[in-house]
Image (cartoon, rainbow, N blue to C red):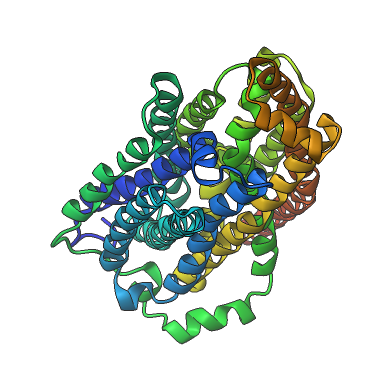
Length: 448
């Protein structure tokens, strides 16, 4: 039994699962309801792609700020209190985003809508700050596998949220009602975590002070390499994931939320095999292979035209991104144990902050590509205003032509990952080989 013996390890793990599931469900709802929310909240805005991109990015901004602030103070505040705070933010964020759309003043509605997404992101960041260190504390000898199993419930939440989002367009369910369904698991988090004792982090359990943890970033400068890599791995996964509905629906000929649900199913399955794969290839090897698959998948999504080939490309991308986030967390926890929750939080917040800036950029690329395909911004605006079946078909064709821009941009941005993870993988193999040679030489010297 580990140092987590006095705690209800199984119950605590499932509280973490439910909190993460709620955050994922909200992520999928934000993505799946993009079209309906844009038409409702940003009707008449000249740059709807950039506007909804900024709103979607607000969740990542709240995530980054909260994760950065909460991670070093996790033991002082308490893992349980941080998780309860996440549940409260999920509730408040949903209510703000939903109520904002009912206001008559467009500017007020947009402000409340943006604020709701921002507060949802705060809850997301609080969740991420707590569940990863809690899991490594509960399972210190099985971090990679347990973190991947925990994060398997991220795609599970995406499946549920994505299907609800699909129901909005298929059965004409109001998008506000669809988003409000996330209140149910958020309340579950608050009820399950009531009067439950949570463990300290690994760092606190072994007596490493807060000051020593914060100073570890000076003692371990190689951590900055992992920090930089996280900026790109998050861009590979969450950037395209947040944009997939807006960019690919026209290309595949059906609501691309179903494509996101399918990819989430692939991720859910893959994350249960993380332990054996990491033992076979090492964590760095898994990260290199996954990055390569994700980049190939994005290039394919940008270039292929038939729905079948888009699905194949999305499968390859999904296989690639499935293990990136939790394996990055496990790698940092294993390599820099003195960094504790601070290091885990730093890479998560840095990655999320990147997405906050990336999504509006993707939106601008998409808006510009659509204007170019339409023959100019004036022509595009006229097509949108016409509202006829003929112009709707033209817009769908223009959207399909514009979709590749965002995915190809992210794929090109992510090439350095192959160099970084490849170098770490090679270095680890060389160091392991040197250690094995040293052990063999010592064994020979002591033989009679």
